[in-house]
Structures are given as C-alpha cells and as structure tokens.
Length: 450
Image (cartoon, rainbow, N blue to C red; front, top):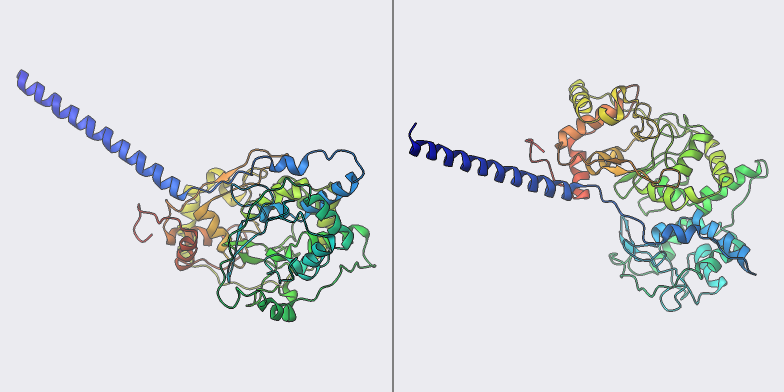
C-alpha cells in the first residue's frame, strides 16, 4: 500500500472515530435530557423542617401547652399542606388540586399580618370547628374542617399556642383558581347545608381507651378520610364508604378496611405500626403522598398513638369485595415478559420482593386496588420511599415512561394485578395514556405505538 493510500485510510479511520464519538456524545445528551424530563421529582424538606418538629421545647410556664400543641400539629400533619415547595415551614402557598380547581393553603406561622399571629383562640376554634375564617368568610373543605370539627377546644387552643411560636414568615398566598360561582365563598353555605354539621368527637363507651384514641386520631386530627374515603360529585365524603379507598391527585389512597385483598386484612397491628413509624414493613413501603405523611407526621408520633391507630383500623369491617373480569391471556404473557425483563431485579421472580427494601407484589393491596391509577402512576412516574429516622436514606423506583409504551405499561400492570394469586381488573392502554397525559411525562420514542 502506498504512503498516500495509508494516509487516506488513516484519515477515514480518524473521521469514523470522530463520528462515533460525536454519536455517543449525542446519545448521552439525549439520554440525559430524556431522564431529566421523566425522572421522579424528589422534593427535599425545607431547611430546618424536621428540626422544627423535633427540637426540644425549653421548660417554662407554657412548656406543657406548647409540647402538647406540637404533638397535635404533628398528628394532624399540618406542615405537609401548609408548606409550599421551597417555602418556609407552615407559611402556606401550596397549591392543592381539587376536581374543581386549585386552592392555595394559607400562612399559619406567627406572622401578624399574613399569618395567624393575631388570631384569638375563639377565632381559631371557629375555623376548625365550623369552617369559618377570622373575617367571617367560609373556608373551603380542602381545609378538612369536616374532620377537624371533632377536635375539642383544649386541643385547638394548644395547637394555636404552638403555631404562634413558629418563626413568623411574611407571605401572601396566591389567589385560588376556581371557576364561578365556586370562587364566591358564600357558595359554601349551600355545600355545608348539604354535607356538614359541626359536632364533637363521640367516644364509644363500649370500646377500650386505645380504640377511642385511635378513632379520634383517624377520624378527627389525622383526617384520614380526606384522602381514603370516596367522594360524591360535590366533593363530600361518602359516609357509607368510609376509608374504602379513593383516587386523589393521580394517586390512589388505598382501602384501609379489613378487606384481605385491597385493604389491611392481611396486615397485623404490628405491620401498621411499623409502616407508620418507619415508612416500611414486610408488605409495603410508603411512597407518593403517603411518604410525606409518614416523614412529617406518623414517624414523629408516639408509639402509643400509633398502636391506638392500628387498634382502630384493625377493627374496621372489610369493605365488600368486587368482581373483576379475567385478563386476556395475551396481556398476561406480554406483561410477564416485561416483568421478567424490567422488574425482577428488585421485586424478584414470583413477585416476592425484598421485604423492607423492595416490597412484595404478590398479595400487595396497593397492586390490587379497584382503580389502577396508583399502579400506573408508579410505573410511569416512579416513586421513592419516605425518609425517616429509622430509614434515613430512601429507596427509589425509577420511571419507566421513557422505556415502555402505553400498551406495555398496561400489560405489565395487568400482569402484576393478576399474577401470583392477585386479582384486579385489567388495565388498558387508554387508561395509561390518560395518566401519562396528566403526569406530563414523555412517551417512549424507542417503540412504535407508545
């Protein structure tokens, strides 16, 4: 080979190498952008939040009142709704999506102008007990006064006393985004007439103290039904289906009754306590909206209160089971192949999981909820466990929105909802497309039909 030919070959090889490098760099950039757009949104707590909820309250004439107030604020998980992303604790401004529009939570710090620093105990009690603001205007039930109405005056006084010690933050929330006539607070007069009567918590004298304490925490202070109870068309809770599970903000707050398939029927009281205290147990991990509840509320509660909650929940009769159509054999075959390829590294063959790390799917109540929205959300958007003092680092499930098209997500969701003895309705590609659209995650570009 002549010198000229060798030089020409060398130039061609160099150009080819440069092209390969450029291609790899381009693919890396595309992959990074893809993952960035579809990654799980991880929101770290505002600086000092956990410290604010756990710092020692110095001894003094009001110390017992303030300590009691903080325990109640923690049990009510006030900070989760009253702290916006990047904002100061309790300063409000978090947009709460409802079927009717977005309602922004108010500032409940001790600021006298924009918070509750100037509120009297009477005014605060009226807000919680009757849903009436300081100026006499009606509150929206996104603030769960239908539950808080049961909080006794001594507890509301303690809550207010503690909140007035929270560092004041001058912050005015955004205006609510509600259509006419719901943007007129007087419309709540009609809603209250149909759906709300102020009342006190009524202990059941036939039940033990722990049961009544748990009932108070679940029904009143913890307002669990605000998420876990299905709603009417007017947004009121259905008392005939209390705590039977509901869809909220593209997640499913699962059934809390004794149903062994969809509820807590297979859980022991110890399972419930472990889940609420640490965010994990042998059956499930707290993720999605429940992760905040665990991190900022239940993980900081006393063992006796958690045991009382478990006692009450384990007493709930199972909701009636529902029949579901059998999945198509083709969907189960396709879903099984996807599960083997994408899920077994963490959840293992047979859906047995790695309890305490990656939850088992076989027998999972979360997987078998009547509404598949939560499962679809987890597959498309991923999730992370709740960080707690027991488990300060979190486990993350990645998003598969970039990898699986709508039909593939539907197939694997159908599979995990019906394999290993599970039973739930099949999932369709249209259901997946609807959730994908609401979440705003991109479709897979690597496979047709996505």
